Amino acid sequence: MSIYPGKPSQTADGKYHLDDAALANSMALAIEKEMNDLFQKMKGVPIPEMGKDDRRILFVAIARGILGYLEEWQQQFIAAITIDDTPYPDYLIRVKEVDLNIDMNKKE
Image (tube, rainbow, N blue to C red; front, side, top):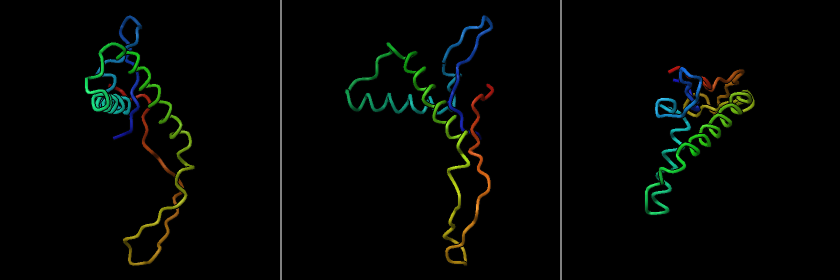
């Protein structure tokens, strides 16, 4: 399964929208759920429906920016991995390539 940020769906008439289907299994949906939970905990009331569309635009933009950056720079993140559970102490494996499996344009 790839990491998916979320993206607007396009209707037949060319308009874009961010409905639940467009955000299914996405980082943006996870951000939205955390925002709703934190708002409830901090304010003692559910987050208002007003502004939901604008918040979703923000969450998708944040998720796409973060994952786009990670995808672009993924080779810089891991140079070597140390595996502790081997018969050889401090066994070092060099990693030549990393694929974070990010799908910026997940198909519905």
